Length: 398
Image (tube, rainbow, N blue to C red; front, side, top):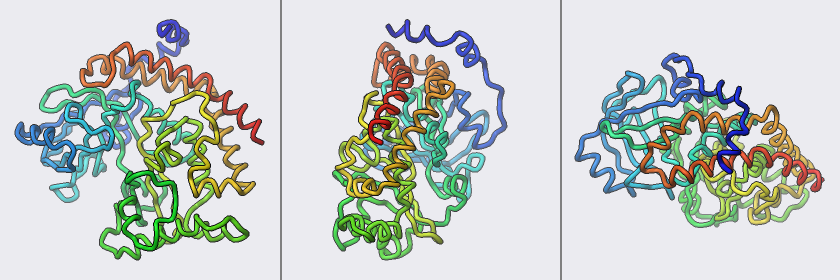
């Protein structure tokens, strides 16, 4: 069945995608080129590597050297990262090029995330989802596939991910001077008011910028946001909430997640998950930034209003007719974009052809090669069916 599905891919498309890509210039765009299987080699002292694996549950940095396409950056900082994907066997890693040497970078990149994609049997959901989010006009990290070697030993197929930092903000939003927060999972959080004290908000929203400023400067707007969110929806609810967050942008963000059948996003099954909040200095309105999309493409018939009632912010936002219409319009646009020229299916096939050999050689991946092939076939089926299912659901909801 898997072979039959893959044989249905047009022969011309297969031939085109199998052609080798021309070498690009050494820039951040080249590191994230989606038509190239990248390769990064880390050199770490054997004792440090042993300790990194033993202490994989901790955010401990170790010195290392990095090599990409003949360019070597020495004395970078490397640590294990991740939540549910922490592993000593195939560790997800974060490289900070300027950890020990101020101003050091790889072609302008100060940090790079190496995602081990252990929750995804297809290994391509993360990169494919981010490509789709970018295609929908929302800021998304640049990503590429690559082989990782540590001390000349093949560790497996990884996704190389652009870190969300001030450089990312400047590139995508034109401003990196504001307040950036990473949402941290600390038990189920559904947008409820957590009280007057700042500590519950600090626990769930880690500040990445302006860290030396007072808690009041950092967290008062967040606290006030969730206070206003949880008031009764009345004639001024939207005006009050809109002082703190960009509601149309939130609706757009969630609609894209919903089309992709995300189960661990803003409307996650265990509460809010996997996003950053950014608050510009001069505007003050928080907006969502997508992060970690390896749990997309779940059920092809996933409902378009799944878990809406669980989230205090989103439930109240959809009570407004224009925001509900925006949500449905964005879902419909997602379906059209995914289906146009079979874009989503083509992107899945392109990734599969690019990484297949590297995946087969990846002894640390969480599935067998046969399970990997079935996962790819499932994604192809999703891409073919999901647009029509969503369009039908949107029409019924209007």
